[in-house]
Each structure stands twice: as structure tokens, then as C-alpha cells.
Length: 133
Ligand SMILES: [Zn+2]
Image (cartoon, rainbow, N blue to C red):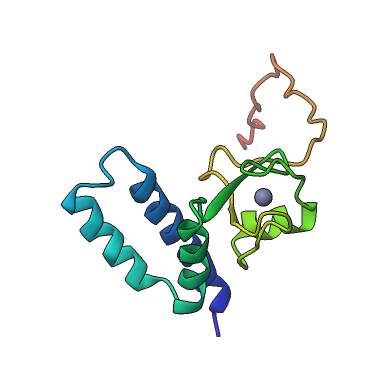
């Protein structure tokens, strides 16, 4: 079973769905049709929770930024953030119950750590002179 891969795809679908529903063209028939297609791709159990949140006037998804839920501003355990980033499973915010997601690649939040700057001015590798008589 490759369920973890499915989870990753489900979250991507939910993010796209929410973007459609909160987007400026949410009322357009094209957006509604697209949202309908996306909903059909989400497992009923997961979609049900998402829709319950939406029905309460909330967003169903919350962005995790700097280990903090962007919707309720409560810190998210690092293990949960890592799980979300890896896309191996779906995680809920322990406080507001929204599905957690991270920004698409390139903007993924990382645990704070010190990274040494790459040294500049390093000489390129010189090929050894392998000439033989
Ligand atoms: Zn939250």
C-alpha cells in the first residue's frame, strides 16, 4: 500500500480546492466546476472534515509557517511539521483542527538552524596532469 503518496496528493488537492474557494473568481462557474472536480478526488472522510470547517465559516486548511499555525497562531509540534513537509500523512492543527499544509517547495519552513555560508573565492578543481610519456 502506498497510502502515504496518496496523502500527499490529497493535501495538494485540498490546497488547490481552498485556493479556488477563497479566490477572487470563486463565484464563477468555471471555478465551481473545477472545485467540484477537486472534491471528487478527495476521500469522503477527509473531505467531510474539510467541509465541516468550511461550513463554520472557517478555512479548512491552515498554513504552517515557522512552526506556527497561520490561522490560530498556536505553535505546531516539530514532528507534525516534518510529517506535513514530507507529505507522508495528513495532520490536523491540535488547536483549531484545520488540516495543516506547508507552502509549496522553495518556501518550505525549516527548523531554525545555523548554516555556514559557502566560502567564496574557492579555486576550481585543477585536473591532475595525467599525461604519460
Ligand atoms: Zn490552528
